[in-house]
Image (cartoon, rainbow, N blue to C red; front, side, top):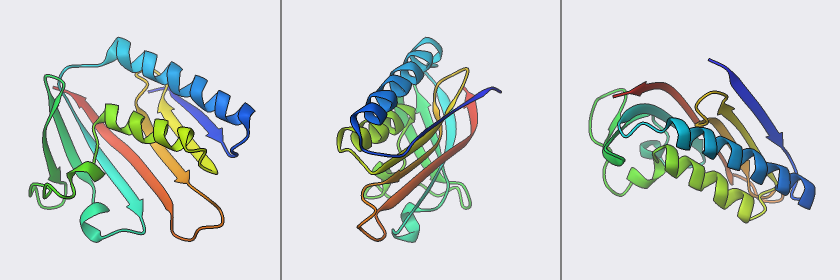
Length: 143
């Protein structure tokens, strides 16, 4: 698997433009590849509750999220925590939002062949403690 690293670390216009170009390129790769059904494990790290920081297996069927289950127990993620574990399209939305909001740091690693985000690191503001957010994906399988 080929990975494409993208590191963008400031809110200036040049970096923001580069982030948008990299994101658009990744979305194009995903659109060409995008299977209707897949499974991906999504991990999340933040200053959050334990229910939103455990690895979750997200299953998508026919373009819709079918289930979100905690990897360690197989239990369904409660509906109030489900948005914390997006599909690939939702992960692109997280990146879009961070770039649009001019987050201080948006570092993303995309899968070079398929375009989906492999890791996302966001720091909204260096002046705010505990606003950092990290997503990592693994075990992508087409269903």
